[in-house]
Length: 217
Ligand SMILES: [Zn+2]
Image (tube, rainbow, N blue to C red; front, side):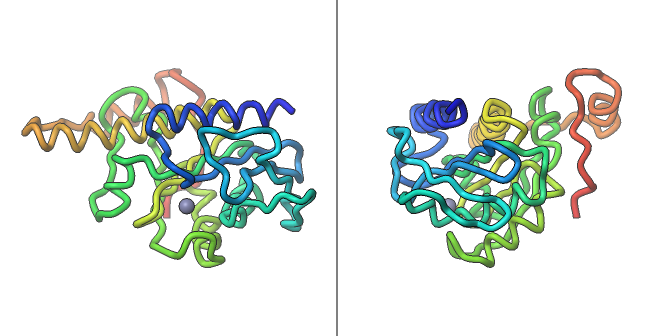
């Protein structure tokens, strides 16, 4: 299955590039309208094999096969239910992003071309225990308003139309967080691109087709 090999590759990439570590995090992909595959419970992201995935029905949450799905499956299902356009979800706790997740400091996007595009919509949810229905509900509620959800004191979940785009989104987020932190530590003052230019970039530059999402709550 094409999606399984994409997720195996992305798992390796996340570990190699310090976008995930240990057994934390999980990844999933929609394989048809009502089916998703997700990493099974206890799997190691850098070393996934075909048998490390559980197959779930999106409408019912029912799991096929004997693999136990990641305990964070309800959060993934919630996103797929809210967003027909989403076919891949990555959840991890990259170092620099998680520093922001553990603070009240907002992440800003008005820095460079990719950050304006990929970080246009970021949502935040409070801390709830991993795998809890409260966390799944909070993420599901925000899913229509962003493609990046920072989970306080936990990590981040990003999603997109395919695995490759979701990965670029996660990498861009981590790079921006690293830039903000390193600039601050080095005493370099970053300047934001003015709102008017950001608006013109998003609306008129033709860089990429802009994602039309409802306004962030
Ligand atoms: Zn988690």
